Length: 413
Image (cartoon, rainbow, N blue to C red; front, top):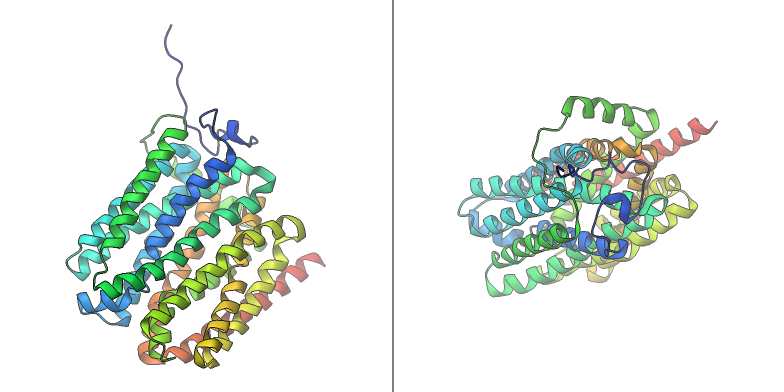
């Protein structure tokens, strides 16, 4: 008798089925363990990306570049990350979680190790593109995997997974303080890269199914994904999310430099402020996901953005380390209410057998818009000045929140 063909476990194959059996893993694995392993991977790759802002003084000095060139490099990282979210979603729907999650972590890990060896600014750009592609595939694959694993309670699980990235953001600036004191910025990227490959090995051991390398049905998947997101309300959410990502990535990418150049803080204190920014997210994101499961997604989306704009404006006028840190905490707490609730809302709208590609297309759209944030803030800092640039971004958050609130009210009447 011939061997039965083993199919990859994909979002499509598990449509309508949730839990460990639904995502195809070793029978002894528990959902919490799988969530933890995937979250460690997110902690590493997100932490690796967030090493870049606090290490900006050393990196710009090494390669003799200014704020605008550094912002361009970060925007390239985020743009490639955005563009690979959609193919990552298609791959999750067609090739299987094992292929996508393990493969993307290996690519990310190799990119980080390569970054530690880069000898010129153009090489840095290439390696950041490699990192961005690996992280882009992993983000969508892991969120789709977790959404299927937890089913209707996905908000809390996605919030915890999101928070793992913020834990990486907490540690990254602290690592940068030590690294800058020692005069080298390269070693942490080796640690991140090796760690990502190690997590890939753990997922290899836990996830079932073959490794599949084939061209997915891109045309069909694209048409299905477009149909999933082509509603006025989902389109409005994506537009709001794009502005959100633009502001948050622009601000987070330059918090250390902004506080050094405009608030006269020393480099260690400025890096600590970035760490605090992410520490707040560790607490807030799981709470946001939990709350979204119980009190509704839209209220958190609208309220968090509007008040975050006010908090960012407060940061511009703040003075002294106490005032600056208070404003950073307020801004972080409010903006980090947004992602888990809004991503859970998007998954609520998508069919199970197209959730990966639909979510991937959604992320490609709003993260691509947001990827311009670092470049715009870097350019703005050299033309308008940091304070005026951040004031414009603060106003933008308030405006889009109010506009989205008006749309929600109009659809209910």
